[in-house]
Length: 339
Ligand code: NAD
Ligand code: TDX
Image 1 (cartoon, rainbow, N blue to C red):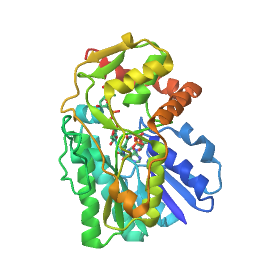
Image 2: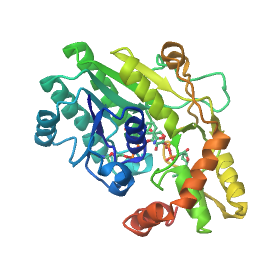
Image 3: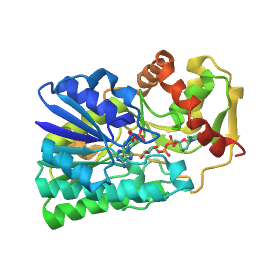
Image 4: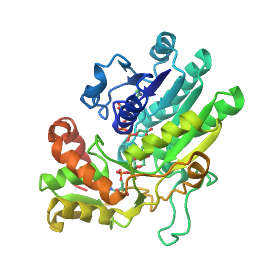
């Protein structure tokens, strides 16, 4: 079987490719990735030369490239990770988010219709549900929670989700959607909270916490997300949405303090900076559906996952040091320079 993985040079896509190649050595994996600032070919070095792996540099918005790839490979399953994924960037410049996240998804689904697939899976996010109040721990996002977005990023992801459901209902395209909470783990781009704080702490730089650091995210180790997607593409029901999350809510400030402790760095590095515009207060996933239907449960406890992640960043300094010494420096200066 051939599986097309888009966005596979990014954080979650690459971890998914590693998971799939390990678990299904007889499958062929084709990765289509534009290699934006967030894509990194060196991440895929360990699989690049395998006979059952092919990397293609290309844009999911480019219909000709996408159609040619479908003609050559005839994928049976398509898993779409390709996206602009950073909320802060979407606040600065929404346009590319609409193009990649909405139009790119449409182009991929058009190719799926034209050439026929067994499954199109859209990797979505819990951010499409908006946020929950901090003082109502009883409230969780279920698949029935209305879409109610806050940022251009989450709006573009919600737009894509609606389009996926429309292709299922209108054309009968066999689709599934997963909406996962915040991921952490190896190969996450250092613009995101956890790797940014690890990298800054290791370099004894200030740790910029937005607002008061009270916003809550529901953290899941990336491998657990990948296993959930594996289950959904093989056993999930078409036309269905599955929430993915492991009941692991934490306030940002507690994560940053934990990273300081683990690295033996002083909390005096913590610097409170201006808040994110429209900052979502709290995310929390109810994973009852994927647990009940597909038997999925997270396997990595946060205490273990964060240690593994920190160890990975310590042992793979060249991977992230190359990133933070390049174009990323300009981004950092722009976002944090006089915040
Ligand atoms: P990422 O930014 O690390 O990687 C995105 C990848 O997509 C990069 O390799 C990039 O080069 C590629 N890409 C971007 N635009 C493209 C285009 N037009 N054509 C082809 N490739 C393109 O993102 P991530 O954190 O790995 O997220 C992957 C997916 O999972 C996204 O759809 C995101 O919305 C979703 N998601 C992420 C999280 C999280 O916590 N990171 C949580 C839930 C859902
Ligand atoms: O420097 C920072 N300081 C800070 O306080 C950064 C980068 C973040 N934060 C806060 C903002 C959020 O409350 O930390 C929290 C997490 O921020 P991000 O890592 O940017 O993640 P988030 O905005 O929650 O979105 C993530 O989870 C859902 C992913 O980036 C999305 O792609 C995914 O859909």
